[in-house]
Amino acid sequence: MTHDVIIVGSGAAGLSAAITLARTHKVLVLAKGELTGGSTAWAQGGIAAVLDAGDTFENHIDDTMVAGAGLNRRETVEFVVENAPAAIERLENMGVPFNKEAEVLHLTREGGHSHRRIVHVDDATGWAVQEALQNTAAAHPNITLRPHMVAIDLIVDRNAEKPTGAKNVWGVYALNNETGHVETLTSRATIMASGGAGRTYLFSTAPRGATGDGIAMAWRAGARVSNMEMMQFHPTCLYNLEVKNFLITEAVRGEGGHLKLPDDAGDEAGERYMHRFDPERMELAPRDIVARANDHEIKRLGLDYVDLDISHRDPEFVKGHFPNIYDKLIGLGIDMTKGPIPVVPAQHYTCGGILIDLAGRTDLPGLYAAGEASESGLHGANRLASNSLLECFVFGDAAARDIAEHWDDLPAPPAIRQWDESRVTDSDEEVVIKQTWTEIRRFMWNYVGIVRTTKRLERAQHRIDLLRGEVEEYYGNFRVTQDLIELRNLIEVADLIVKSALARKESRGLHYITDYPDLLPEAVDTVLVP
Image 1 (spheres, rainbow, N blue to C red):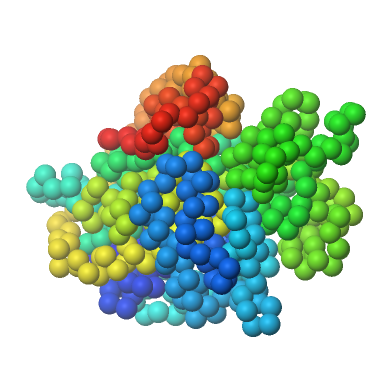
Image 2: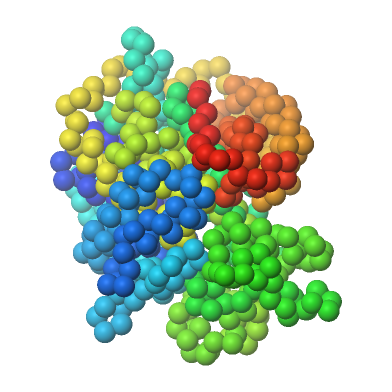
């Protein structure tokens, strides 16, 4: 099946690109599961944009650079920040019902921001954005939305009937989960908007499908990846044995929430502690600082969690600003208007990814990337809160515009070999996949987590080297399933994360390693070359 453009991923980046491209081209959007299954729908906080007269682009740029510990590429930061108001306008035109006060957009504040600049829809911004983008895309005759399509690998020159030695990408092989068959989907251009690699870790706020598929696929095809050691851990994931991966938005701290030690902290119970880690910004410090502080206190006192307390604010204010979180917690027997919320750090965002330029172009002709799968230079060593959805809109649109502008330069795909299953069988040992998946996520959490050491990283690398052979043998002998495809990608991105972490001989932003606690004089990207 041939299309003008194939987009892998149906979240903010993918749908933004599809809507822009559909003016002139026919677009196929693939979702691994349901169309709403990506990270976009989970986003609680909002979208950062300079819309207040008391704020400036320079303020937003500076806040982003400070959070990113100087590793950001300034031209990227300027490009994204300056395009933010237009992105908000496009979303409003699509019907996103942003919160307003007296017909003016209500702006909240989050950690690391010097001003109120977070546009939001209560505490469920991502869901409102996903719904608006999806409705717009579904109504467009040039856009085809296909859920339950699991991308396996990019189609490159070696897959052609007559390889020419070119480096072009011409679409994807994808498993149709509804039929069980692999389809060959070709196009002149492919946009990788497949999200991050959060599920490489045992504890993560990322959705089930965040297994680094696009990053692994691009790497195998020959594209460079950058800064994979920069894994962001959100400071405040709900600690609850019944509900896993429920995020408590940064905005709770932005609206006055305090971090305190819980009742089982002995004589220190009820005490705030952020003054010991960032006395000026306290709870409004960037996420890496707050996450390390929470991790430090949990380990220092042998706690299961710390408390996030906003019960000193007016109950109606709390309910009005965080209705979805309030309702969720009430259902679990926690009233955030009367007492604290138990929280722990959890992996939250992949700041590294496929290396791209300002047009979303990768190293490979015909392959673009946008959103969490990419490394544009916006986030640097630590993502500033609510810059992630913004990056999706700006780079999804930028990639689409570049494809349209250079359409005549993109060659049509040649004859491509179909997927060959003639020498494989159905697996009779699915337990192998489950066991290996669990092992990867556990050693990544223990050895490559918030605080790292060279010895732990080397142990993780050793485990990856052993498991890689097992995974490759399994992949080579059995028919692909979604679990097997994801496992193959998990081992790939785990390897990229560990190799990147071993390469950085300093502590910067999200990468904190006790063997190298200081900053090097110059901020340099970690770029891995296939």
